[in-house]
Image 1 (tube, one colour):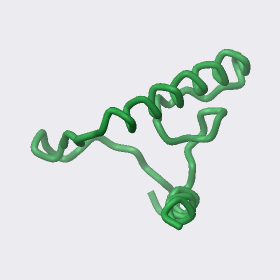
Image 2 (cartoon, one colour):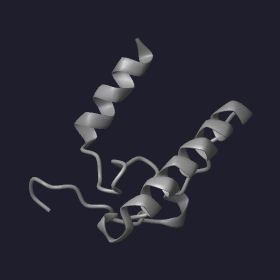
Image 3 (cartoon, helix red, strand yellow):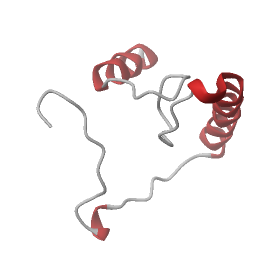
Image 4 (cartoon, rainbow, N blue to C red):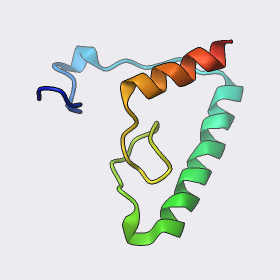
Length: 76
């Protein structure tokens, strides 16, 4: 897909990785999930459900540059 973002499955089962996570990180993700569920319910049919962890609050995909810039700010 030229000039766009394509979400696909990994090439092989070996490409799937488990990511170790602290209890604190897991708790933050759980709270974030609750906020996303609340946003989804409040928007009704306007919510675009792509089952993404990192997305806009309306479910749309964030651009990679946006995620990168957010990460850079977080590191500072």
